[in-house]
Image (cartoon, rainbow, N blue to C red; front, side):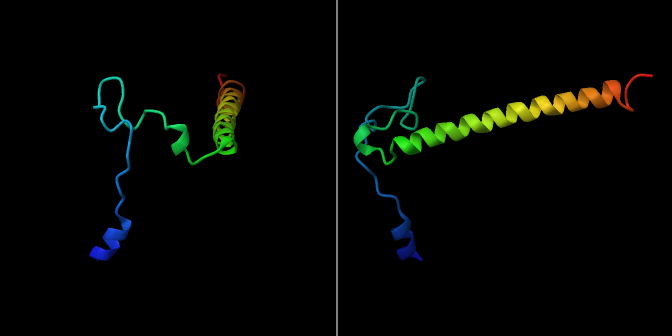
Length: 82
């Protein structure tokens, strides 16, 4: 069991932000990654933000559809005023 834990252990890295303490304005999790340490390329970056924008657009459009559906059912349909 201990050999498995040794293999799964995450080794510390030399972090340029390690000397900076957590403050009101930031911590090591939100500071940008240096260019030489990035493991993603421009394709991954663009596809990530593209997917997020598509998901946002789909949510917006489905919300508009559901609002129109509710309006037609409750105002003009069998559940509307008589």
